[in-house]
Figure 1 (cartoon, rainbow over the protein chains, first blue to last red):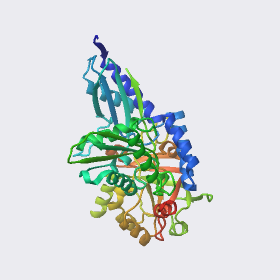
Figure 2: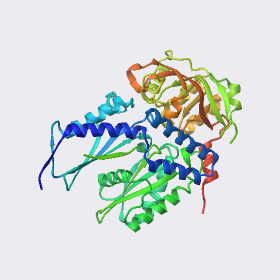
Figure 3: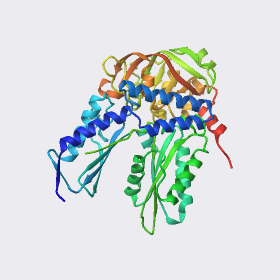
Figure 4: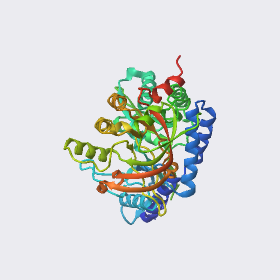
Length: 281
Length: 186
């Protein structure tokens, strides 16, 4: 098989376009999740929130206004085909350039700063880039501008194996209870089980790329997702934490093999402003 | 749901006393945008005994860092940020006349206590509805700390800005009440 050459300027253009689309236009799975949520919700304040979210999504799409003032840090997953040769500027700079252009053209808030001096960089770079090598000669790019209301409420724990699935369930549900209104429910709950310290966090984040509410292909994992969703929606937290039956719209669990001495679990909370777009170059 | 109560800023104690947890409110008039970095500076000024960049008496602070406006717009997307991060800075502001805060998420016990003591109220706006909320803004100007960019203090004039009373000045809390009402106990 031959090597396919791709100019990194195409990566820049694609990242820019995905930043612009993601921050103003929710995917149809989210709009459907709002409609389903509204039909399931019994609390008057919860219903009112669902109506506001639908209005907000329409205004943002029609007028190209950022769905949320927090356009987050730009999380970029790249699946790089191993038969691709990238030509031009280096890949990391190409991605950052796409973020820089997208956030400027979209009138998106620059939220990144130096963690020590707290001085804002003004262009929302750098992106958080997760690079994976895959077979083939294509480049798949996912852009997930992730707000920090949900990010600040996310947690990682390394249980001992004895904690078992019961420990996993308790940890996830307690996290939702403690987070309350802060992560902007109704939520998409990303859960990583297994791996090690960083792997469980990355698979929790990666689970958010899945179409909202699509069950995991492994029936055991899918069952855990369904149980967690049921339990989370019994907490009463509801839309925006004002009380209601729909605290989460979906729970996505991803797993990875782990060590005989550990049971790592990560909960990555995603707000209802679930901005996520993908493209193949 | 009850029809919303339309009120004008700045807020008098009489108005605050009439507001009850769960009330829907439409705010009109001037509100001040300030978040983490601006709060740190305001409280520093108080400690140094210096004058603040705006009059706190009867004022309303909105925890927001707006997105930049497109040409022709007053503000870009402008929804609330999580309020708990402002908790450590809030009681000194309430002691000096701040009457209301707009944000999202639960406040700490010191803030709730200070609200009851100072007759103040905490409103929730819908987090993540920044595009919708920006439509209620008819004027905005940075009045302090321009160097903070999105965290600068802004004087924003709003028309029918929709909020809900979370904490009234009688110690009630909509997050607690709402959750208790809908929690399913086995």
